[in-house]
Each structure stands twice: as C-alpha cells, then as structure tokens.
Length: 560
Image 1 (cartoon, one colour):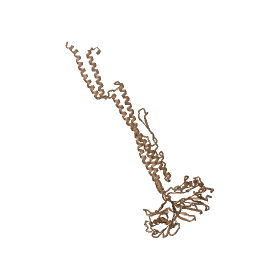
Image 2 (cartoon, helix red, strand yellow):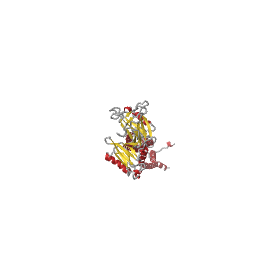
Image 3 (cartoon, one colour):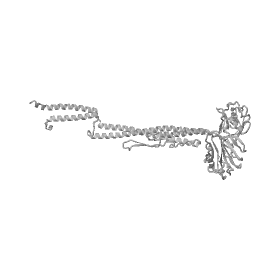
C-alpha cells in the first residue's frame, strides 16, 4: 500500500510544497479566467456576502431607475401638453377679445350704411324713383338732450357725394355737427351720429309722393330700405321711418316704483314710473292691452301687458313672454337689469335689422313710453288704438356668432388635447397622480398630483357672446385658466427637476455600489499575473528541490 511507502522528510516536505504551489496556481488561474478573486463564499465569506449585498441593492435601484425614467417621460408628456394647452387657451382669449371688440364697435355709434353703389349716378334724380325736391327729416338730440331737427332736400344735380355733404354741412352750420354723412369706398351712403346718440329719419317724400310704395321704392334705390319699416304714428297714419340706435340693444329709461326706489322684475307695469314720477304704462285695464314687437317689418307678435282678468302684469312677465316666443327668440332677447332698473331688447341675430315696438289697446288710452332711442325721440304710447316705433339696430351678431363657434371649437380641442396627453395610462392633465419611488425600501418618493385641465376643469364655459357681460365672463375665465396652467406648468417643471436630480443621484449610487462590490470580489489582472509568475517560478524551484532530495536515495542504487 502506498501508506507503507517510506519517504524521507525532505522528499515529503518538497512534495507538500509543490502541492500547495499547484493549489495556489489553480486559484490564480481561476481568478484570471473568471476575473474574480472571490468566486464563492468558500473563497472569502465576508467579502462574498458583502459584495452580494451591494450588488443586490444596485439591482434594486436599477429597477427603480427604470420607473424613474418612466416618470420623467410621463411628466415630459404632460409638459408638452401644457405648452400646447397654453397656446389653445391664449387662442381662446384672443377670440373672446375679438368678440368684445366686435360688440364694442357695434355699440359705439348710431349709423346706417346703404347697400347700393350710388357713384354710378351723376345725379341722384337720374334714378327713376328719386325726384327734385324729394326730402326727409333727420331728428336727434343736442348735448343738453333737447330735440333738434333738420330737413334734407334732394335737388336736381345732387350726386351722392353732394347729398352727403349737404347733410353734414346742414348740421354743421345750424347745429353742432351732431350728424355727419359720407360716401364709403363702395359708393354707399353712410349717415351717423357724432355724439353716439340715437337719431331718427322720417317724413320721407320720394317719387313725388308720400305713399308707402313710393317711399319704399325710393329707399330701395338709395339702398336704405333695410333700415326702415312702416310705423303707425299718433294719428293712426302709416309712416315709413326708423330711429337708429347706437349698438344692438334698445334700452329703456330707468323704471321706478317710488320716487327714490328703482323697480325690480317683480314690479307691476301699472306701477312703473320714470325718475320724475311720470307713469310709463297707462291704461292697462283690459286683456287686449298689448305690446307689439315687429322684426324687419315682417314678423309681428303681441306680448300681453295684462292678465286675462285685465290686471297689470309684472316686468318679468313681459321679459318671459318675449323670450319664450318662438317667432321672436331667434331674433331678439329681452332682459331687465335690477341694478339699473332698465328694460332692454337686444338683437341676437345678424338677420335682425329693425325692431318695431308699439302698443295696442282696447280704448285709445293704452300707453307705454319706454324711452327707447333717447329723449324726445320715441314716445311709444299714443291716444290711438295702435302706434309703432321702428328702431334700426347695428348688430355684430354674425361676427359674434362666428367667434362664438370658434371659441366653443377651441374648448372641444382643449378636451381632446387633454385626453391625448397620457403616457402609459397616466394623464397628469386629467386628474391622475404620479408617484415616483427613489429607494429600494419605497419610503423615499415624490407624488405629482394631477389636475383636471379639461375645459370644464379649467372653468371654461361655452361662449355666449350676445352680451358684453357674458363676453367679459369668458375673458375672465380664460385669464383664470391661463394662470392655473402657468402655475401647474411651473410646479411640473419643479417636480421634473427633482426627479431628474434623483435619477442622476441613483445612477451615481448604482455605480458606487457596483464599484464597491467589485473591490471586494474582482481580481486585479496585473496582481494575479504576477502571482502566477511567482508561483510558476516557485513550482520550478520546488521540482528542482525535489530532484535534489531524491538524489540521496538514487545513490543507494549505485551499490548494486
């Protein structure tokens, strides 16, 4: 048996040394081939487990880093949505501002503009329906509110430019220039008030006669027929005339229910007075006492001023009847302002050119002197059984309707933009929250709270550009929405900066953990190479020593 073989002490020592050297060579070669100086817990338990702990944490943080990256993408998506949303809201603000300007422009002056190019006529009497000495009357008020009136006559040889100059000069020479006329670039006659007050044109004789047919034909020739309508005067005669008001709204004098107290919507019409105490509604004692509303000399509707029993109705009753009338409510809208005590009828359609208002009663005592159109211009009531006054309104309804449509379309785009601003199912602009974790224990995190930036969430209501107050509301809503968007955008940028900072920190921390792990287990090739060279030298020396140790035994063989 091998155990029975007797080796010398020197030989056995050399063999053990060679075995140890070979074992070390094997370890060095493994370190060089794997790149690790600690390959298992057997190599160095403390370093192996410490390194594994560092690697595990680095792995956990690497997985969190993916989540941090996704959070950054979610916030960046929301930020891009914020930038586009800001542009849409600014666009909505621009549209609302245009609506305000359009309404302001429509309300700024009393003006009529003809529809016919009259430059083609060397003299107006070349028109078949216009004759020498045809005339019309323009009535307005001066700075003190007193009625002033001028008769304008068309003479042979008058061109459209000459007629415009005559109107302007006549009011400039005998008055204070309250009315001016001109010819625009399209050759159309323009007549307007320089003081922003209402003015009236009536008592027109055209075609050598005062009949409705001849007057209407003359107005058509001048392109002014759209502003005029048939009135019933206090004597019961038909008159073709119009009162031109500044803007698109007929506004009454202030209604009072006592000498010092303004009326409210619940006040009975029979008890309404003006500021001097004069009764504005008289003779309301029969179911046949009505207010007449006429649109464009066509649609005529009667609005009850009394109940079936003949009792006076309230102001609100009249407002409701007008607004609930299907043949009126597409053209006009009535309202009553408790703060000013004024009743108003507003044109809400581009098709509304004239509004006729009058009263009709059963006995000739019914009267409704609302004060539309300014002082001394429009006593609507009369001693006759019927009387109408026609008011030409300057309306921006078409432009306002178009702007209203544009505004509402932008609100729809805001809603779709918000809906599309999601990233992997998270939408910070539609009330979703985003939580980002920064450590493996999930006790370090940041939550970005989402907002509702749909049009309703921003407080943007559908546009109603029919009134200045609702336009102002839209402008205020848009400005508040802009502030909310900017505020959230700033908060979003701050949160993004925090998350990006934590992303950089986590990257650096992962690198440090991996470096620390490598220090415990990764082999140094230079050091391991030097060890291998030393071990190989030692191995060669050990073999030589073993050879020398065996020579003493070999000398015994020489004896045989």
